[in-house]
Amino acid sequence: MVTFNKEEQGRIIVAKIPELDDKTLLILQAGNVNSGSFDDFNTICKKANKFGAWVHIDGAFGLWAAASEKMNHLTKGFELGDSWSVDAHKTLNAPYDNGIILCRHKDVLVNAMHMTGSYIIYNDNRDGMLYTAEMSRRARAIDLWACLKGLGKNGVSELVEELHGKANIFLIC
Image (tube, rainbow, N blue to C red; front, side, top):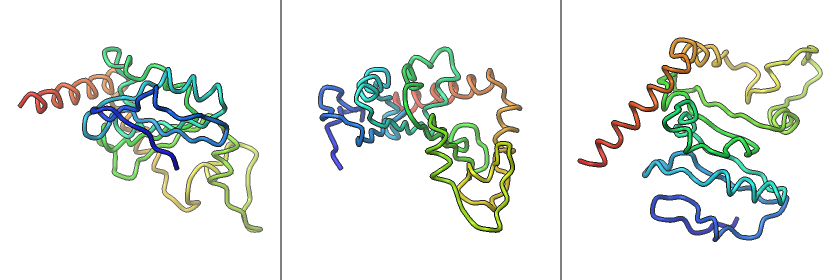
């Protein structure tokens, strides 16, 4: 595993990224847990895509900034990644076990979650069992859906902006 320098806010220093290839995994962050800083997704993802490197964006709480017109500039280029993780409980106050993994490559996600057994019967439609870590898990997506439905895009945007404003107050204190 190769690591490289980060600046004082925790962002990756783009000029110090080592040589990339199709065996490279870059993990970028949307909202450093200590500083709130975002990596330069646009520049880093374009470079990674050029060499076939995989880019995962840890957006635990920061990726929700994409919902805010005032803050979505922080997420510019995030769509160029390969996979993303987001926690609904950290920003939306959804139940704690509402983590979200998104992946551009359906086959990779299905292979990572796939389970086999002679007793397993698949259907021809999108089988939810192929997209979760456990086949017996309750339907957590319903809690997330209810949060998003209740808040709506404007509610998520307002929540993100309010949390950002409060974080800035604590920085000043």
